[in-house]
Image 1 (tube, rainbow, N blue to C red):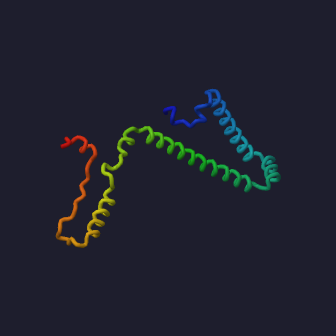
Image 2 (image 1 turned 90 degrees about the horizontal axis):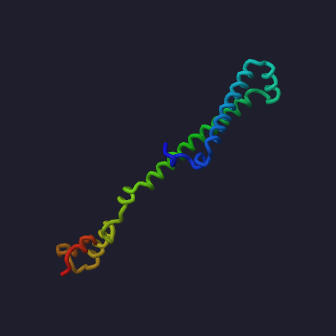
Image 3 (image 1 turned 135 degrees about the vertical axis):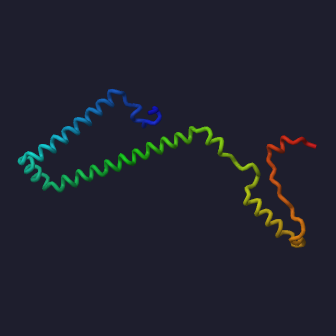
Length: 149
């Protein structure tokens, strides 16, 4: 994985800091598993927890809420990283910048059509059979290349 794909916070942390965080995560997971197993097998701990927290429903609700928020946060973080990666790819891609160009003519096609209609309506003495003026699009590059007379 390239270094640019990692978030800014992880790039500023030294290696031993990341190792300590990983170790702490493993310890927390181990202690959580241990207290769960102890709760399942120790009736004294069950009665203590039930009297102090007023039932296991509260624990289940708290764990479900924490898990739900953690899943949503992880999902949003992954979407943010993917969007940042795509944005950096688009911004750094030179071919995208080269393909985005303005139209070669002064006016776009719709404006030219509107002008033709205005010309047709402005001169009522001419009928539809008369020749109408024709707008011709001139490319500035071709005009510069052609010899001046």
